[in-house]
Image 1 (cartoon, rainbow, N blue to C red):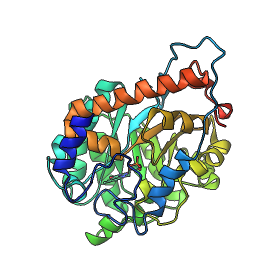
Image 2: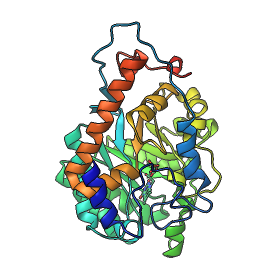
Image 3: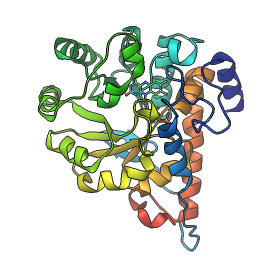
Length: 338
Ligand SMILES: Cc1cc2nc3c(=O)[nH]c(=O)nc-3n(C[C@H](O)[C@H](O)[C@H](O)COP(=O)(O)O)c2cc1C
């Protein structure tokens, strides 16, 4: 990982410092770039809220080889993790590699590691085109996330995404706050539940599933379940859309409570290690997404870099489960936390 990070640091110069700890402090306000919006408070809160949580050590048991596999939204995962959708290599990461090479590294590397990779969307169109192409190359194994565009544009994008052969579609409704889209003259807006329902019904009529990303309150989680979403991602978009939002670890428990078992609860934001994965699962998530560290691994080591990063997470999660006495993902609950 050191070699991969060194290479990424070189390629991402001026966009990401590839800090020892990716906590949002060095890159305050760097959007476009890899940082958090405004004061960077939301990005920093993601990291800090997780760091403040302590684990209960438990050693009087027979768990020596925990089962870290799980199944979410029909995907059998080697650990409860996915690669978060991230796009815009040229304006966010310095353009050291092409958008195509980047998207392929994330989707193929994730598949090889036994997890699923998501792809991003934005302006210019090469962002989603690269993502869709990577999913096609992987036989439809990947989740395209589409921005909440208006009218025909949204329908066209959904139709295009459908041609990738994917079995799940995602939408980051929180993109309504994205400065990068506004700067490029293409702002998007929030989506009322009635409109979301129509989109979800359409995706369901294709036999596919739908994930809503950017849910931060229990009320909106319930609304997502009511309009038929198959999954939500509890996310503040890595602190890139609204300054002073809480860290996702602060809200995941409350947000997951009313919808547990009704839909898949995924969370992202500041998750860096297998220990962070364990904490989020203990707080109520079914799986997590990792953003920036996967992007850095893809920049520095392409497909192999992504695979290596997930291997590191697997070893860390397994170790943490032994030390907290969790034999499988299902047995991780709030009692793991101090
Ligand atoms: C440079 C960059 C680009 C992103 N692009 C997208 C995107 O196109 N679609 C999306 O749903 N989320 C996007 N995100 C948000 C991530 O999917 C994710 O929510 C966030 O990065 C998680 O936080 P973490 O990076 O601390 O793990 C982006 C994030 C970053 C840093």
